[in-house]
Length: 140
Image (cartoon, rainbow, N blue to C red; front, side, top):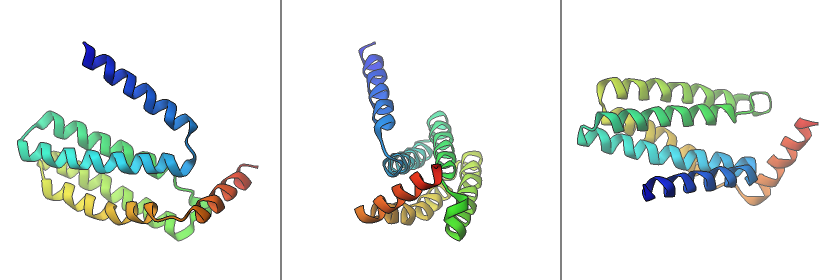
């Protein structure tokens, strides 16, 4: 009972944090959680835990959907197109990994995604501010 209440509290705290987050921070949270879910999926496959595998892969697919939703296809040009296509491929591979209980396919997705996350982690504060300005101008 106490564990359930703690989990509800943590979830509420995370939701409040996201409400105050800027677009960069929201994408950062999605990326970090995707890496976590991919790790859980792979470990679940290794343990032959079908339920945990399915949950982690489904969450991973949802997180990729969130990342796709954050792409600005108009302003992002070729980079957004390439990421969109790569995210589609990752969803296909994760679906196949779930069907085939394949840790190798999950690892493939992780290896495809890791450079994207590393690049995102390396965005300078100056470039973040330029991005925020573009978003603000686009909303007007």
